[in-house]
Amino acid sequence: MPIKVGIVDYLNSRPLAWSFLRGEAPDGYVASYHPPARVADLLAAGELDVGLIPSIELQRIDGLEVLPRLCVAAKREVRSVLLISRKPPNEIRKLALDRNSRTSATLVRILLEERYGLTPEAVDLEPDVDRMLAEADAALVIGDPALHVQRGRYLIHDLAREWRELTGFPFVFAVWAVRSGVEAPGLGEVFERSLCSGLQAIEQVSAEAAEELGLELPTVTEYLSRNLSFTLGEDELHGLEEYFRRAAAHGMIESVRPLRFRAT
Image (cartoon, rainbow, N blue to C red; front, side, top):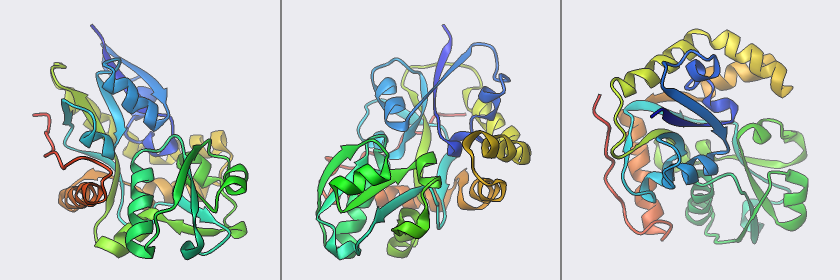
């Protein structure tokens, strides 16, 4: 049976998924592309074997193992996970959440409560900033739509930067997760080689993405090279543990499950 891989169809996944995007993954791997919440749902339903999932889903989906050393993270500013408003945070009473988000939807609620003492009413909407702000005081927008936001029109809060200021840690947005019982020789190596090839080809990745998405090349290059980090190191793991601890403290998950890593 093929190994079914779910990949997030955002720019931030391209270095990690480069081998799959180029058709260079080993035989026996079949990739499909979805919004992040959909990848998590398909993995939970057993319709995927491996998925690049929102990190909060590690606490909600049973029987997952994390591929070590790989993630989508930001050490400071991320640029693609934004709280957008026309009024200051202390005036936010209703919050529109990008319906594609799981991890950032939890993160923004933690930050609003801990940094500003707010627990706004939340509603899930498509990532259309004007519509979101017509229905709410602020909007959470993630991924490629956030990169297209005209920043001069709004008040912008970068959630990775807010998290860093609150905790001192990087923030881990997504990880590769494997369903328990899925066996494939060299599974971890396949995904590590994919990232390695993506980083080696980062100029090509950036140029192709800039043309496809209608973004300026320097913006894309800086985003992939400086804003994002793809290594799940010690600091990232501490940040992830702190995120889970705070999510549990705010009742957004039942309790903190220890991470299980796939042996490589």
